[in-house]
Image (cartoon, rainbow, N blue to C red; front, side, top):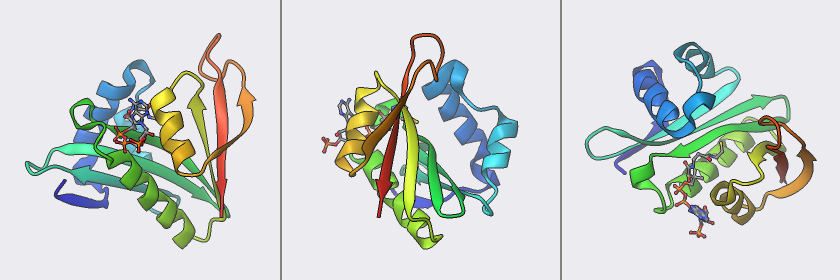
Length: 146
Ligand SMILES: CC(C)(COP(=O)(O)OP(=O)(O)OC[C@H]1O[C@@H](n2cnc3c(N)ncnc32)[C@H](O)[C@@H]1OP(=O)(O)O)[C@@H](O)C(=O)NCCC(=O)NCCS
C-alpha cells in the first residue's frame, strides 16, 4: 500500500469497478457511489497500491451519535494482508472524530471472513435479521460502543 486517503470523485470509476467485482448483483450503481461521496454524512476511505490501483475501501455513514459501517472490501488479490483491519481502524477513528459513540453494521451470517474481522475489532452481535439479504439469508447486527 502506498496511499491511504479519503475518497474523492477521481476514485469513482475504480470504486464502482471493484464494488462490482466483489459484490456482483449487490453492488452499488455509479449514482449510489456518487451519493456515498458526500462528506457531510459519509466517510469513504481508500487504499491504493504502488501502481495507483484501488486495493480496498470502507464506507461509513454517520448520523448523530451512531456510525453505520456500510461497506468494506479488499480486492481478491490483496486479501489476508491486514488491509481491511487497517481500514476498519481508520473508520472507527473517523467515527469517533465525528462525535459518534458507537458503530453498527449488518453482516451476512455465512460471511465468516467478515465476521472474524469484526469480532477481532471488538464488535458484538446484538440481533439477527431474518431474510435481510433475501430468502434464507440472515444478517447479524453487530455493534461496537466506546
Ligand atoms: C472481509 C474482507 C473485507 C477482509 O479483508 P482482508 O483485507 O483480507 O482482511 P484482513 O487481512 O485485514 O484480515 C483481518 C481479519 O479478518 C479475518 N479474516 C480475513 N479473511 C479471512 C478468511 N478468509 N477467513 C477467516 N477470517 C478472515 C481474520 O480474523 C483477520 O485477522 P487475523 O488474520 O488476525 O485473524 C474481504 O474478505 C472481502 O473483501 N470480502 C468480500 C466483501 C465483504 O464481505 N465485506 C464485508 C461485508 S460489507
